[in-house]
Length: 372
Image (cartoon, rainbow, N blue to C red; front, top):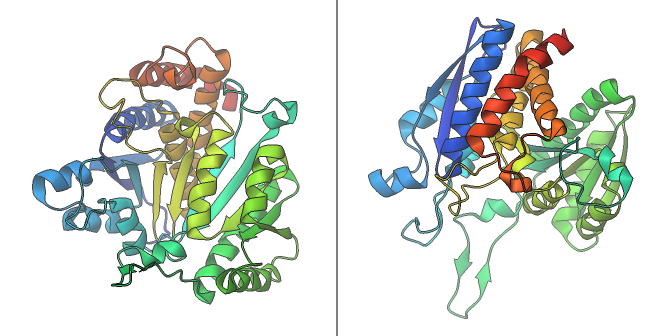
């Protein structure tokens, strides 16, 4: 995709399954409303089929048409995919998001975690109000490399192989350091932590070695290391001390859910899957079959993922108006949650998906006036 500044941004919208459909509908409505307020660059959002339910009906989880659209789009906006009783013949789950990561080479999984007024205070320490860190997860190798390649032999032994390469680790490490540079410009300081298990596994010791080599090119950013088990403890004891972390695929998968718990749950945990040429943006939560179709889902994570998409497009295409729109969406959401009159069901309130969406859209004009 060219990095020139287009007049219209093509967005491939993949709602998926369960609450993915509901939060996506909410996000598209919010993005449309924000665009009408700031009269800035246009997003042309086109919906495409994919997911477990599509597989159950048509025998394919990620149609070629959808994959082609994702490749051609300026960005992909993704809901959630998967369903408990839908499986491939081998018993595994259709997971188009993983297929997209590999097909588009989305090697950096970006999971920002930030507490702001109106979110639950999971930790009693008042410093937890300062939680603001980003977990960067390598997404094309690690233990997930074994997906579809594992084996079970006649001796009753099963094996999955972890892959760590210099190329994969180097590029995700550099991505983390560049992200830290951006945060340093806004916050005045930044640090990158390499999270591994270098004391046990040769592959993890190699991961750390490659990380250290990459760090040499970023003299303005401090860095350190942490074993993954120690990091899990740190995330509970003093998460306000964390900044940017970079880690292997499986470790990142586990730690990102723990991180979401620090701010009350997955409903406020956005994410981005980013490569050199493509970006996909989605809430970190799943399809939640237990509440799907009941207007109970919190669309907050989807809203914040939409804002992440705007930031990425703004940086990639030198389009500051889109960055301003991202701040507009964040500000409106923070205003609604901070006021407390409209509170998501996820946090003990009575507001469902539609009520939250209406409240955030209603808050846009005030937020726009404040940002101007």
